[in-house]
Image (cartoon, rainbow, N blue to C red; front, side, top):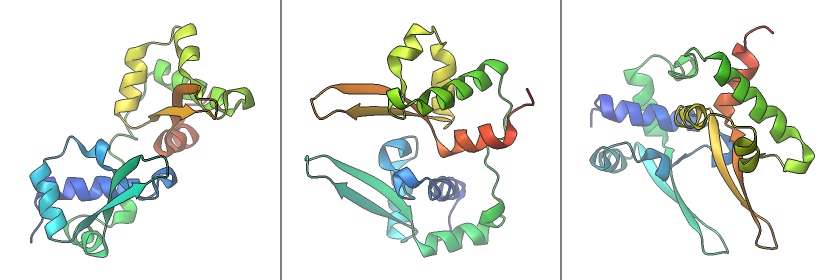
Length: 175
C-alpha cells in the first residue's frame, strides 16, 4: 500500500506521540477522533500501525495506536527524515497571555500541595481566560487531568504536555 497524505499525517502524529512517556510512546485513540476511521483501518491492514489495549484492575481500559517498524519506514520513505520533522504547531507564535498561562501551569504544578497538577479551581479563581486554555489544550500544549484520591475525592486540572514543556524551555521569550 502506498500511503496518501491522510495516512502520512496519521503516521506523523503517532510518531510525535512516541516521545510522550505518559502515553508509553503511543497515540491515545480518543485523541485520534479527528482522523477518518477508514484511513486508520487501512493503516492497520497494511500493518503500519497497531492497536494496543491497556486494561486496568479497576475495569478501565484504554486503546492506543502504535507505529510499527513498517510504518516508520513508510514515514521515512515519504517525508524528510523523522528526526527533523517539524513540530507544526510548536513553532507557532504564542501571545503574551499564552506564554503567561503556560508559565503559570508549570509553576503551579510544581507546588507540592497541588500534587503536580494545576488545579481547575485555581484556574477559575484566578479568572484565567478559558479561551486561551482551550486553545493551548487543542494545540497540544496542555493536558487535562482527572486524578482520583483513595478516599474517592477527585481532582481536576491541567499539566504541561511534553510539547508545552519543551516549548516553554526552548522558545520562551526573554524576560
